[in-house]
Image 1: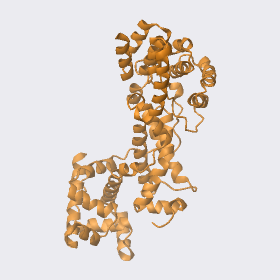
Image 2: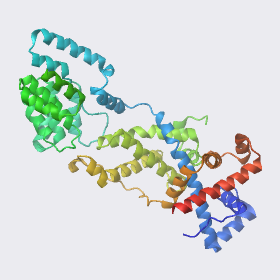
Image 3: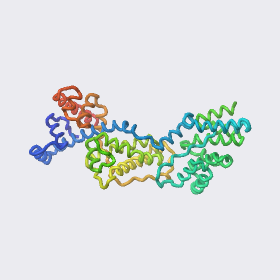
Image 4: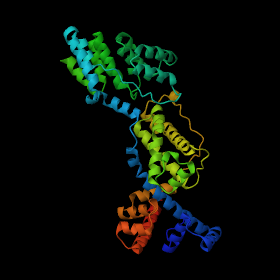
Length: 247
Length: 187
C-alpha cells in the first residue's frame, strides 16, 4: 500500500471540505480536474474518506450499547429471564412456589415420602418462547402454546404427530416427556425422557432431562434410578434433591 | 428533531442518518431490534448472539447509507434492509464451524436461508480505521468524535474543549495524523 500519510494540513482540510460538500465554484472544478488526472491524489482522497468513515462508524458503534439499554424488554426476554431464574431466583416465581408449598404440605400429611419429595421439587418446564410469527416449525410451536396454557394433553397429541416423523429429535422427546410429567403421567414420561437424556453431551436440555427423569423415578418409587439420573444433572436443584434422598 | 419520528419518509430518515442524528439513529435501532431478536432466538441463537449480530448489521447498514450503496425502493426499505443484513449475518454465524461445534444443531432445523442482498466484501481498511480509532488516546478520540461524528463546528469544538479555535484546528490535524499512522502500522 502506498504511504498516503504525509499530507499537509491544508490539503487534508481541502479534501475534507470536498467530502462534506463544502467546495464550490472554481475550487470544486480544480479539485475534480485533479481527481481525474492524478491517480495518487485520488487514492489520497479515498484514504481520507475511509478515515472519516471509520471515525464515525466506530463512534456510532460505541454508542450502540447505550441505545440498546433503551429497548423495552421484549416478551421473549422476560420469558428467558424467567427460565434462567427457574432454579435460582424464587422471588420471581413466588406465587408458583406458594402453590407448590401448599400442595407439598398436603402431601406431607397424606402422601408417601417420595411423593412429598416429588411435589416439593416438581415445577413444569416453562417451555420455549412462542411469540414469534414465522412458519418455521409452526406445528412444534403451536403445540408449545398449548403446553404453556397448561393444555398438556393437547400439546402431547400434537407433538406425538411430529414425533412419529422424527423419533430421534431430542427436543421433541424432551418436551413430550415433561408434558407427560406435567400431566401427572410419569410412566409415559419416562421413555421420552430416557430418549432425550441419551442425546449428545451438548444437548441444551440435557441437564433438565436428567433432572426430570430423576423426579419421574422418585414418583415411581425407583430411588436407585432416580439417584443415578439426578447425579448426572448439574442443576442445583438436582444436587439438592439428591442430598435429600440420601438423608 | 421536533418531528414525529415514525412519520419520517425514507429520504428524511436517510438524511438524518447521514448526519448522525442521534435521536433518529436511536429510533431506528430500538424499533428494529425485536424482529431480529425473534429471528435469532427462533433459529438456535441466544439474546447475546442477537445483540451482536444486530449491532454488526446496524453498522453495516449505516455504512451503506453513508456511502450511497443503499438506495430505498419503498417506504419501509431501510427497515427491511436492516432485517435482511441481520439475517445474512446470522446465517453466516450458523454456518460457521465454531458455532456448529459449540451447539447440537440439527441441520434439518436450519431453516434460515441467506437472502439476496448486497453481500459485503469485508472492508479491511475501514475495519482497520475503526480498530485504530478505538485505541486512539482519549483526548484525540474525543476531539475527532466531536468534530466528525457529532458534526460540531471548529468554533463549537473550541468552546467545548476550552481552547482557542486555531488550537482546535491544529490539534485536529495532529490527531488525524496520529490516527492515520496507527492505521498504517496495523496493516
